[in-house]
Length: 327
Image 1 (spheres, rainbow, N blue to C red):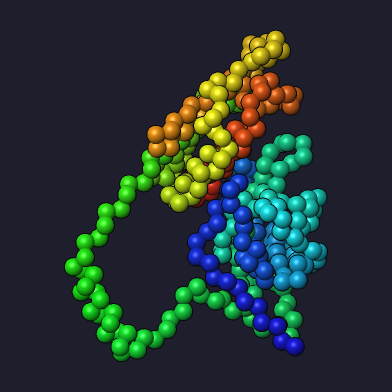
Image 2: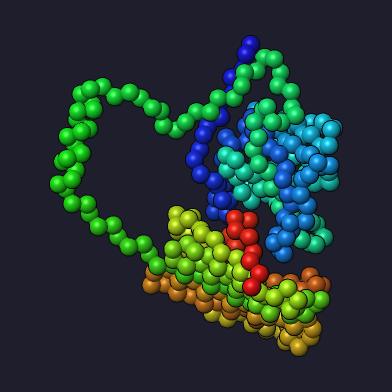
């Protein structure tokens, strides 16, 4: 029996965030080619595919996968659980889906020893571009467009022609102004090490323009600019409200002697400040010592939802849409 696979053609990319889930239809019968690996914290490409490194991945309809690495094939099973993709590659068996579209896939993996977060970037390829052999009882994939081109009758064409004139007489209602949004994230982390950070600043304006400024002693100032779709920005703000950000305390500071002593030690903690404005709502939250130090010690007690919000903002800034420009 011949099998016909139908791939739904969904327009636009899914820039996945904690409030968004991937579409499993984009996985079924999809073939991907690895392009490069990004170290997320430093926004640095640490590995690229070349003539000596070929890796392809094929997710089949029956939840099995095939992979090709430098001339060798292997198989296994895959499963999608929310934003977690279960499949085995080398020493890892699960990845977080950071980005997904019809043409792009980004899988994220965090080292258990917390040496960093790595993003593996793939581009979608056709069957003719992939090394996988399609069984003889399967037909090529068929891409189904969301809108079909249907021929209109003469009556429908005539009706549409006169309705165009009628629409001209009607004044278009004024669209309401979008709610003002402004997000600013400053500081955090520790000052010290081989190349101390002098500036770490992210701002997202109401029109979705994101500006990131990152400056170190040795590398100087790096500026990253990109656009966040307004729809995604509004979804993010709605998610922030659900995280109860506007109900948080203004300041989270030390409450015990160990924490106060840590402020005086090196590397020196840099306070973190997050400011979010949404219409008439505005909240500025400051954390004296954010996150953990190199000993995995968290000194200040603050809501875990704050970490989620900060992580989401940093992920938006870390997308490889526009390169960092050295000033």
